[in-house]
Length: 412
Image (cartoon, rainbow, N blue to C red; front, side, top):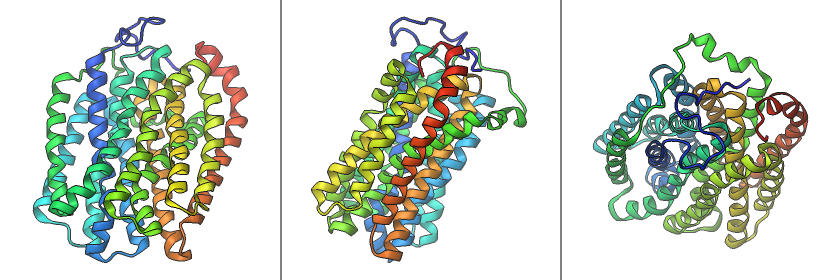
């Protein structure tokens, strides 16, 4: 069962959300997450310019934009362990310095090969791994009845992907894509200062555990189910965020800037509804929300595969991203209820699964384009995975509600 990991931080339940936790830390967590996600997907909006300069194949383009996603997925487990060992604030500071240093080095030294883009993608993975830091940083301050909203507000940092899509293509056209890497260090440095000033670890942090104790949640089937659900919801979100600039330029011949605007519209939709998804899950239960999420996402992604125009594709992508964004918030309404005592490592493990899902989607779209000449098979396979997730929800829902849902007294 989940334990009240928030005791000692704030034990007020049933009150207003903003008075139940630590608002400066919540804001700091959001800003850190937002800017980290901005640079995590930076190679996506820059992909048309990079692929033209380096003469990349469709498969290489897909792998390039997918590499930060995979690196971020694996590093989330490391960060989850680090959070529970030294605390989320210090873990976040270390991660931010690595990303800033990596981007600055890439700008000064230049990236002139496919291998160089992969190396940069690994560094950007540290930004994607911020997920396993920012969410526990905020979550530990809030009681169970406000977990969905707290995780949703902090997790709305997904919107950083909008900033990358909006500004990176235009800046690349004006100054060159390599210069964009250096320019990104400016807002990152500003947020780092704000983060150090405002963020505060919640009191009552659990005592350090052994590695085997940290990974104990993996012995529970519930952990694997939650990881599977998030591999579809967040995997779909971040995989699309990284791949849509390539899709719109290759499929419809849009300019990189116009493709960036289309991508930004889709990503904004998914980011905006994440806290809404968390709040709705607090009210009616994360399980009910996920059932609707997987149905809508599967239908929208299948429709994308046959969309004949930019307008229709854009509309279906927005619907898909809305569903996936709600799903992200819904999954993380469930995680703290079941694994409150292991929230740091579970955030990392679930986040890792989401990153792996994103890596699969982004890379498979590139392979589908190279092997078949169309992106459609990649979208159809991921739609099928959403249906598999839907069936899985029905498999576990009754047992969850009878056991840990009922014991915690929180609607799931």
